[in-house]
Picture 1 (cartoon, rainbow, N blue to C red):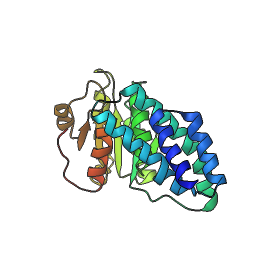
Picture 2 (cartoon, rainbow, N blue to C red; picture 1 turned 30 degrees about the vertical axis):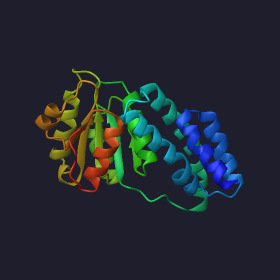
Picture 3 (spheres, rainbow, N blue to C red; picture 1 turned 120 degrees about the vertical axis):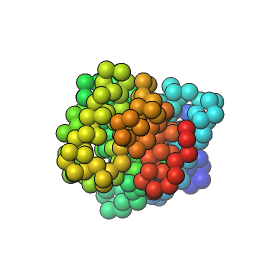
Picture 4 (cartoon, helix red, strand yellow; picture 1 turned 180 degrees about the horizontal axis):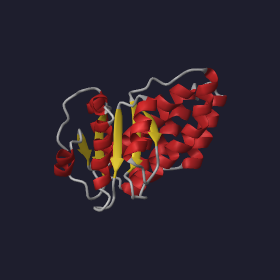
Length: 221
């Protein structure tokens, strides 16, 4: 029964089925599967499969977004139970995300946040139209390891530079990594503004964030 439920959890993510993911989370809890086991031995395996399929272009952005919604539905059931038991999922690092000042696009940023959460990171999403000062405040308050700034317009890319400048001005830059992303963003731009890295899509963002936080060399994407 346990293996059947865990396999179902994995499949619900692959299928991009939020209702099934939430129902299986409740079923798992009712059958004695701990929230942590459900996440790590069920749902995360589904996200990893989706990530691999996306990387080889066997799945596409709408598929990944559906899988991310399913993952969120499962976590909405499991996270309150984790808090009740007092068990904390080991964190791979604290990440602050947001879309640059003047930009209200968030699909890509939200997807990155979901994937990072699935991979064990503690993610704080500041939303859209976020100033450098708000990023700095979050870094200071949360003791963040990394900041991710998204921009979907060429006119708002300058907001990414502004975040790095504010972090430097407030003396926070040496202690936090900064990554940038978004449709118009390039590796050259990331280097120009002094970012620590650039990710072309959500899956490469997870690899990049993990590499930077663990201080491992980053393989060029």
